[in-house]
Image 1: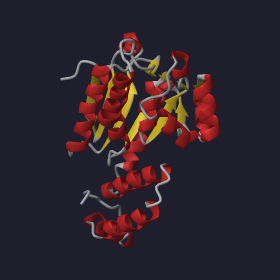
Image 2 (image 1 turned 180 degrees about the horizontal axis):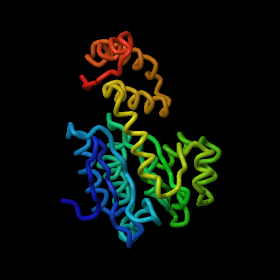
Image 3 (image 1 turned 60 degrees about the vertical axis):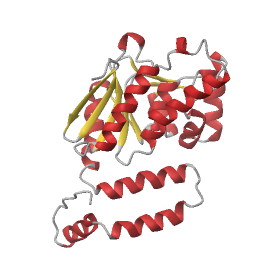
Image 4 (image 1 turned 90 degrees about the vertical axis):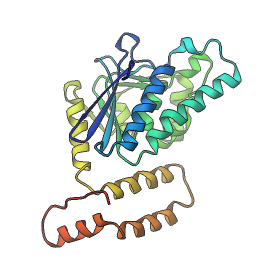
Length: 259
């Protein structure tokens, strides 16, 4: 079905693996299109409860974009490239009502760092490296990097990282809040699946509201507080709320159905 990515579904967790290890899993138009198709599956397949995005091999998550696709582009082409990526992949990941987590193995640079940042949070292997080196090409991040890196690590550090094109290691990324956990490479997918397995025991509708509202908070949306109040009210109409409160009072584990 796909030529540049691999997908597997196990215990409700859909794993999307960028599979171009000979090219350090670099993003090209085909990879972007296929991740977009895979994300459509995440949205529409009720068997999928959550998703992981990772890279094939041990060296790279996604080591950047395929620069050879840039050489013939002028302004309109560059804008179209960025807009297509945002619509097909990056915004689709960020706004997905199901959890999408990046399992970052190795280099996560340029468009790869932006792909990881579009996910709801990140788990990194000890050999992971992050960076936005676009200024070395006379460019800036074009897949949301200027916005999401600033949301995650703050104005001063994002300015420095993007203007110097410096790479940072996994531990520094964790200190900055760019990643949530750092684990040995051999444990990366196990740790990520462990977290998602826990999340999958919670109420799916509530999880979806949390994703949407935290995204609004990250964008400093002034309507965020009012939207939280409305979403809180919506939860009260759900079967999951009835099940969750009943289970609590009956001292048993809830069984949520996402209704």
